[in-house]
Amino acid sequence: MFFDSWTDLLRVTVVALVAYPALIALLRLSGKRTLAKMNAFDLVVTVALGSTLATILLNRDVSLSEGVLALAMLILLQFVSALASVRSRRVRRLLKSEPALLLRDGRFLTDAMERHRVPSDEVRQAIRSQGIGAVEDVAAVVLETDGTFSVIPRSSAGAGTSFAPVRGADSTPTTGDDPRAP
Image 1: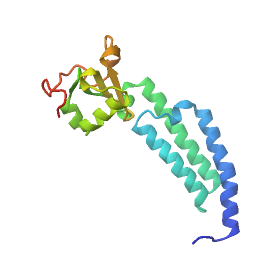
Image 2: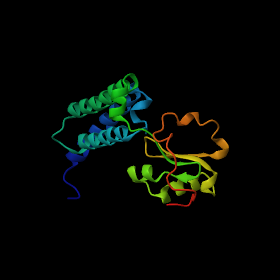
Image 3: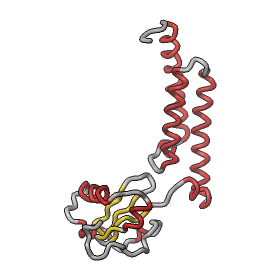
Image 4: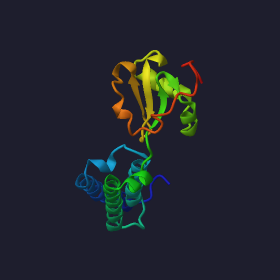
C-alpha cells in the first residue's frame, strides 16, 4: 500500500519527466486561450487535462504515447471549439453562457438572481469586496460567464455601453424601492 516497487517509482518519474514537458509544450503551441478562465466549458477542459496527466502518470495500462495523444486531442478540441465560437454565433451560444444582470441602480433583480441561483448575500459580498459600503451606490452587478461578479459603481457607470451583451440589461428592478431586499 505504501510502497510496491522501485520499478513503479522509476516508471512514474520517467513518465512525468516526459509527459509534463509535453503538456507544457502543447499548451504553449495552442496559445493563451486554452487555459483561460472564461466559462464552464474551459474549466471542464482544464480539469480533463489534469485528470489525463494523472492517468498517464499512475496507470500502467496507459502508454506514454497514448497519454500524450490524449492531451493533444483535448487541446486540439479546445482550440477548434474556441475558434468555432469566435466565428459562429450558434457555437458560441452552445458553449458559453451569457452574462446576467443581477442588480441595477441599487436594486436587486430577484427573477435573475433566482434563475441563476445567486443569493443576495453573495451579491452583497461582491459589492463589499469592491470597497463599496452601500448597495445604493452600485449601478450594476453582473454575473459573468466565468461565474465571477463584476460590480460597477454609479460613479463609473458612464453611459453603460458595456452592458450591451448582458442578459437582462433592459429589464427593470423587481424589488421595489428598497435596495436592501430581498
